[in-house]
Image (cartoon, rainbow, N blue to C red; front, side):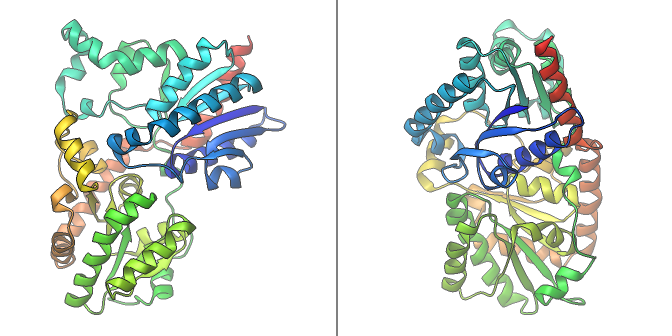
Length: 405
């Protein structure tokens, strides 16, 4: 099997690597050769990574627009490469703007292999806006505005694999071949160590509070959000001297920057390896995490957490001024639940003092932490299905066979 994978940042690279491993183990696949836009995880899974997309990934639409020239060059290079190689399947992982345009350009260029969108686009407004539930009853102008991404998929993509139970009726209404397979993290978010072992490793045995920090996987996130988290950690350490603070570093290249910020703030933070993060989720009393993949992981693990997010001042101004996209909640568990089950501190509220104050209040309220765990268990029930990645691999193999018939 010859595979091309396109993913735009580290979390997509992680999901793509697990999918590639599942495809390699499929009973009908004798051998597999993969090329990719990805990063360290796909490389470790055996793919030839043509461009490390995690290195240049940016926060938000505005930041990505600033990088448009490099994205255009990458797009053209990728299109030429895929049309030259003609793989059996092109697997698009998340990264909607780039990947949907790539799918259309491939079809326009005569590519006849299978195209599958894994972690297919989500119309998040459908989680809170009742108009999307009755899409067929809405004015044509509304349906036309909503339908753009779905029509692109219908015309170019053989199969859309949706991982969220949000807006699935839109796929149906606009005629997109799709399947809801559940979130792939549900099979992965499991500790490797026995309960309490990580607490011993970091010196948080017994009743010592253990607080986890996850500032994201992009350099820009670590620079903007990570600094606020570390400053908040300094305040927490002053108020609760016995507390142990731990932070799993998403990428090796981020370690020096985090170490430097911790030294500037004179706070002791235990830096962990990325593979230790699920052990931290299992043992921590509270997590403080950048909204994104980390909130998904916390929800699946049932780990009480605070979701935080902010952009650089210029990008925040541009986003607030020119972007119409709004949701009643920002954090993933709150969107899925339809109510605030975890605190979210975004934009101006994402500051060290408010983060620390919210964390200290939660740590002092055992009932609130228990309610959060129960609410997160309900979120997990909505998004999880058994053997998600294996199911995805099976469906991709079937899509390839269908193209050959």
